[in-house]
Image 1: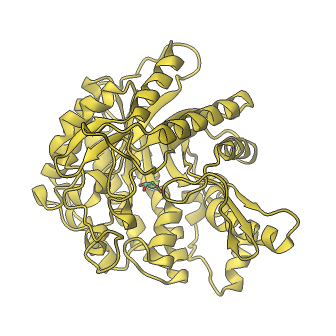
Image 2: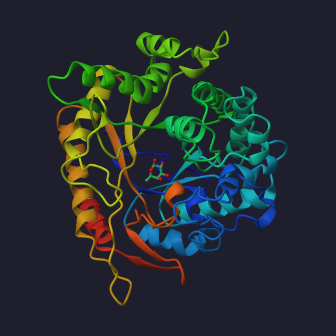
Length: 443
Ligand code: FCB
C-alpha cells in the first residue's frame, strides 16, 4: 500500500479540497460490534441536555452506509475526507487491546476512500470520550492524557500504512469549556478549575500521542491538532471592551497556540487565571511535550466575535444558529497566524454554516445562503494566500446534515441533505457549487 500522493509532482504541494465529518455525529450503530458508551451517549440521555431531545443512536447511519457515502464524497471532486475515529469503538472502555471489529470499520473506510482516489485525514478525538474514562475523572484527570496516547498508538498501528495526516484532537477549547465549565456539552460538568485542568491535559494528550506516533512511524507522516479559532474584536473606544477582548482572545486562542507553538502559556492568561484562583496543573517536562513541532495546524473557522464591556454583540448577517457571517475575519485570522506563528502550515479543517433549509418534493435544497457563505470564505482564503499566508487546504463542514451536539438534528450544516426518516442523501445547491469551485481551481 502507498499513500496516494507518495510521489508528489515537483513544485509546491497541491492545495487540498475536502469535506469533514465526525464519528459521533454521523455513524449511529452505537451498540454495534463491541462499541461501548461514550460521554455523548450518556449526555444525550440526560433530560433537557439536547435541544430536541434526540440521541445519536442512528444519526446518519453512516456505519452501515459507508460505501455509499464514500461514493458521494468522491462525486464531489474533493481529494481529502476528514473523519474521526470513535475511541469506544476501537478501544471499548478506553483501555486495553484494540477491538478488531471496531477498527475494521475504519480499515474498510480507508481502503474505500483510497480506491476512490480520496485521501483519508484522520482525527483521533472528536469529543467521544469512553464513559469509563470520564468515570475515572475525565480530562481534568492527568491519566486521561496517557490513555489517549495509548489509544492513538493503537489506531496508528492499524492505519498508518495508508493514512498520511493525523490530527490528534478537535477543538480542545470546546471540549474543556463547553464540557467542563459551561456544561452544555458532554460530560456536562460546570467547574471552571476542572475545565482549565482539562485544557492542559488535552494539550498534554496531544503531545504524548504525537510523540508515540512519531516514534512508531516508519515513513513520513504529518501530525497536527485542530483548534477552533476566531478573532475577538472590541467595539471602538471602549477600554473595558478592549480588556474583555484581550482576556477572551487569551483564553480561546493564545492559550492553545502559544502552548503548542512556543511551548509556554501566555503570561497574561496565567495571570488572569491566577486572579480567579486557578493554576494549570503543569508538571515538569509537560511543556516540551505539548510544544513539540507541529507539521500542520488545523483551523476551524466559523465567525469572529465582537465584544462590548457586557459581552458579545451580534449584528449584521447571521446564520441559522445566529452566528455572524464574517468572511473577512478568516483572511485576518490566517494572516495573524502567519505573522504570530510563522512557519506553521495551515489547513482550514472546518468551515460552513447552518441555514434553514427548505427541501422541495424530491428533497432538493436550493441553499443559496450556504453556497454564498462557502464562496465568500474560499475567496477569503484566496485573499490570505495572496498576502502570503501559508494555507494548504480547505474542508467544508459538513458533508452531511448530522447530529449537531447540544442542538440535536435541528441545525443543518450539510452540503448534502439527509432525510432522517429514509436516510436518503440529496446533494444541495451548495454541493454543486462546491464541486464547481474545486473543478475551477484544478483546471
Ligand atoms: C465545530 C465542531 C463540529 C460541528 C461544527 C458546527 O465546533 O467541531 O463537530 O459541530 O462546530
